[in-house]
Length: 254
Ligand code: BV8
Ligand code: ZN
Image 1 (cartoon, rainbow, N blue to C red):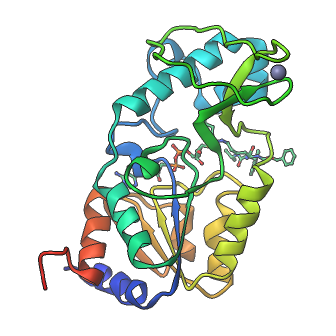
Image 2 (tube, helix red, strand yellow):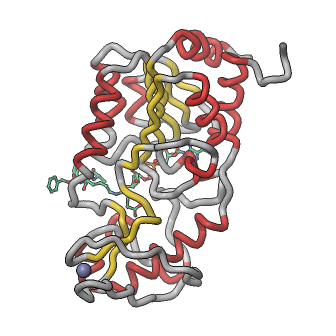
């Protein structure tokens, strides 16, 4: 076990209230492209940040709905990875832990995390763009083309993805729960996020300002390096299981 893992294992083993904060890098090794990855297929000439907006949906609902349906299909074909399972293992061993994710996939849930706080919504919670009535998740998945959005059963408005677009406020209860958890934790573990998107990127800084130990897991440097006490440079599927093993053993040891 390397020194950084030891430097992270000691505070994690002592922490009573742990926040785990994850970004798209958490799902990268499950084959789910991150926002940094260039878009492919029909959307290759678009920038994700331009498509993930209310304006893009208003201007071309079929293009945007088709993109989210294609992403939902990719997530349904993907499987949780060892990093997701290590996060669930930490939650199981630290009763006072809270998982906060920026991801809109359901891989944390499928790995056993009971109630992640989804700061940016979910691919599995579509709703009417006009009256906000929840809409059913379509069965079958799109194959990468334009798909006209379904119509609301109540007002026949176009159904939209249940995600937070750029320029939209985060769900009040999600951001309040995240700030509350980060303000009162002993340790925050940030995994697989570039720390570029606000206000989500504030969460590790809230924990650092409150005196918590901040541990970062990311193969690359990010703006969160400067608020992290320990930087574990590597992919989540290797670093997180090694960290769990360093603190609690991997179950093989008595
Ligand atoms: C709001 C859902 C106001 C949609 C997402 C100028 C300056 C500062 C801020 C702004 C600005 N101009 C505009 C803003 C605000 C804007 C913002 O922050 N823009 C940024 C780009 C500058 N924010 C907003 O608009 C937010 N809303 O501010 O509203 C408001 C208030 C009241 C009333 C009205 C309005 C809303 C932001 C939410 C956007 N929605 N997702 C969808 O998914 O389609 S954000 C989306 O991008 C993700 O959720 C994630 O949060 C973010 C970043 O995506 P990625 O880069 O892919 O992922 P990540 O950052 O996690 O990076 C991948 C990382 O993983 C990398 O570091 C990589 O090294 C690492 N990695 C790779 N492989 C691995 C790995 N790590 C571990 N293991 C590996 N194997
Ligand atoms: Zn409606």
